[in-house]
Amino acid sequence: MDDFERGLGRAQDALGRNEPQIRRALQQLDLDTSGLSVLREMQSWIGTSRPDLRRRSDTIRAERTEWGASSTVPGGLAAFDEALYGKAAHDPDVYAAVARLAETAESGKVDGVDGKTLTELEKRTGNATFATALMNAMGAATFRALMTATVGHKGDKKAERLQAALGKTLGTASSRLSTAWRDELTSDLTPGWQEREYRAIAVALKNGTFNTAFLLAVAKKIDAWDRTPYPPGTNSLVMVPLMEALSRDPAAAQDFFAGDSTALKHFLTEWSMSDGGEALGKALEAAMLTFRDHDGSPEKPSRGYLSAKLASEFVHLEAERIKAGDSIEPFLKPVTVGHILAGYVADISRVAASPVDTGAGVYGEDNPNLPGREDWGARFNKSDLQAVMKEIFTEDSKTFASVMGAQSVWANKLLNQGADQVATGQGTESLLANANVISAGFGLMTDAAGLAKIQAGQELDEAQERNMKIFTAVVNTGLAIPQSGTWPITAGMIGAWTGLIEDAAKGDSKDKATLVANSTVDQMRFLIRQLTVQAMLNHDLFGSADPLSKTHPWSSLSDLKDGDDPRKAPNNFLKSDGKTLLTLNEMTADMKDPKPLDAYLRWLDSGLAGKRWQDIDSKLDQGFTSGFTKYGA
Image 1 (spheres, rainbow, N blue to C red):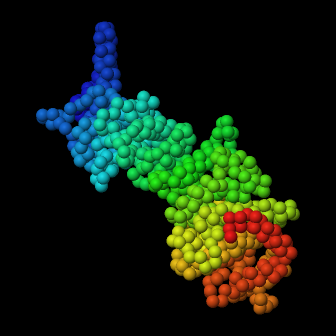
Image 2 (image 1 turned 180 degrees about the vertical axis):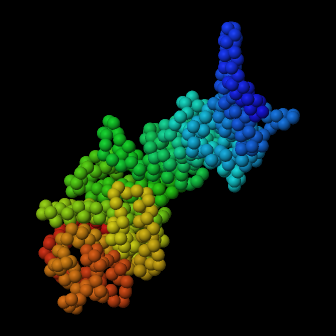
Image 3 (image 1 turned 180 degrees about the horizontal axis):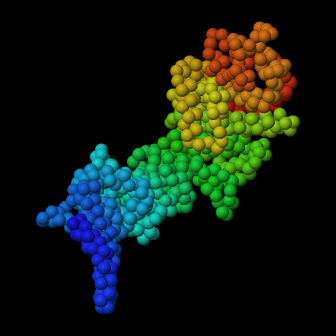
């Protein structure tokens, strides 16, 4: 082929050089030159044919070398597939890839895939032009057969590499593939092998980054098949990789659950998954926690509206399962439920403070004590919340840390807004109203954790003891959580707060936990006061550190002489910026002589913080009593 193409090149050059000379000679002799047109036509034909010959040569070379060993006919000549060459749009790499991969699809044996083929495919997984041409040339049925050959080879590195490469390539091409191609992917599956084929499709989806419409359409087809009756006691292996795929595309995940009124109930109460619900949990988190807004309307819901609606339905369905008393294990891991509750902690606090229940749905009113519009919220029934939180807090103390950490962030936001209102001369009403809401939220959470009504000297069970350590850690480190948090809450933030709280809880002894349990309400009151004081410090409501105001904490330090640096005082309870409180852990670093804590309480309770604090503290107690203690002792 190469020699032939080069020979044609020489002929083209010869024609180009000689035809004009022959034409001139004939014209000088006044002879007819019309017959010379065939030479020009021949030259033109050669010029247009040579590139295709070179592409064919490159195609044969790619198949025989770059993409691995090739099947040959006698004499060493490669069999050239004209039909495939046309489907591959005359692209050498696409032709070679399909030729090599089709052999594996037909044989069903992954071990026959050449290492070169894998490497070349992996190089091009993100090339949209190559990926689209490959999928169209291969066809959906062959792609499915190829993916099916890769499943069932756990631990086989070659199979896993091929799965990943094919999934990524399909994802790259997904936005350019026709509806007919997409539908063919899940059509006419082999009887008796359908589960393996559907699993293969789902595995491909989890490995790529897909066009949302493509992913959603295929996911619905897989789900519809998966809901067909199975023998009792069996679990489908198809939905785990599908949920992993949906978790990577929050829009597709949300449309999957919100677009089918039966989906949440099915996955929460009817059909468990082989991984214990881990992949399902990630998909649910993506659907409910990613999009938060107040756009659209109930008639034309935004993604934020759908997030809140799903969260409300989710809690109600989980509560129904718990209240039914079924012996079936939960289909989700507690950490998922904890993350979702943490994401809607503002609604939990609102419901906890409300005298009435309104049931499931979407809440659209704005908090009058916060500026601007709030995101769509979720309506919860109080007894539903208590049932769901009680279950997860009993099973896994990490969930208690997640929700309490989120509540601390929300409290910080509300109290700082209230302190800003005080600082700008708009009164204390906002601060006190917000304090009541957060107190009620903390109360509902500690009640669900089994801590709010513990009597003095009461023996704690194992779950209570774990949760008490978390509760103690939140009280001890609460100020550190809001300082690193923003709003709205994301799953990443929740994980960071949970880790911080768990680290603080390590090493707490049973005796220490029991001691704190005897005064749970007092400890929570301490935290809320501390959060309020920090919010007031943030807005300079105790005056400045320089020049030093009379009610500023540093003015209250005992034994501080003129010229002394308050930062170095052994009883200093502020950080070096003069407006950030130490955490309780930091104040009590020396448990035998906690000078900073003593000085802090003296400043607050002996009138040294000023009349403004006394007035606010008095009303805080009223709000705390109405908010927290209805759940407490």
